Length: 337
Image 1 (cartoon, one colour):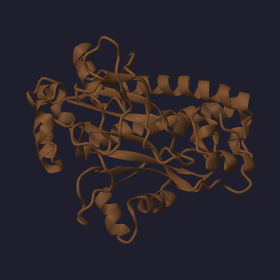
Image 2 (cartoon, rainbow, N blue to C red):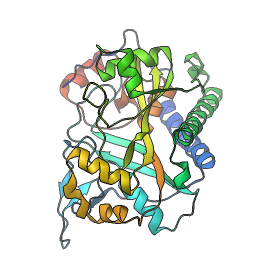
Image 3 (cartoon, rainbow, N blue to C red):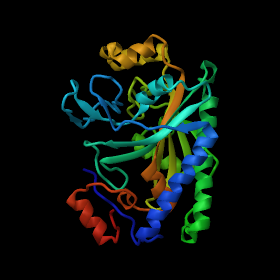
Image 4 (cartoon, rainbow, N blue to C red):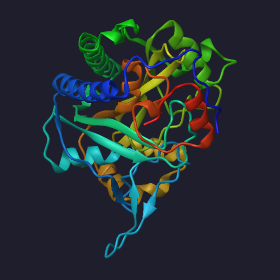
């Protein structure tokens, strides 16, 4: 488990109650701005799905979902890792039109997460998905959507500073996004790990979007793992912001244009996941019965950390922590919820 390191001399800019008020306001504001910018409508989403449906997100392929049985139900349930696949199916089932989309609260339990100041067993995201045309499957459309998300974050931060003046000491979030491919990062920093590359680049470019996550780079390794059956590995990416409190980059969002039938077929073969072709979701997609979409997840607790100047994710969400983390936070004056 990674060692917990907290910044020297850190203190929260807001009291516990002010923090709770600010989180509530932040979430309401950002949701409204995101929905208006991307033409999204709020829907309800599942906490768990059938283990045999193929709807759960496999993340990097090694994480174990929390599974349990339900009396009278034939298949076991698994707590979602994310709603990447469910959202695409929901757009079809709910009869959304071209250019329309949905957003929802996604709550997950990731039992294999390495706990540290940024990673918790409890995950909360705004998950969103919208229908696009085949002509929209391009880098420019992806970049324009990223810009909309960053603008919504910056506008939310500006309003929070007007309500909570103590937050005005924090750096303003830049609305200038620097786009870089994962291969360009590897070429720039060939001796660094992928995470080290992210920190080095984002320190110089405080709002960065890395394009191309999941496919192998020239080194033979991917920048990061990504399941083969939702994002197109050439049209996806991660949104990173510079965390001035912890002096590191923070990933706020993983998103992308989703696979079409040809891309799904190719990526299943590349990743050795041909056994998924007969799962209900995958059959619909391969048969061309699902709409072309793009979407992603935006970390609610991480956005709260960034915009409220928090050092530890446990200051903005309730979870369970190992004893070492609890003791170090207590000694540093960090109050875990």
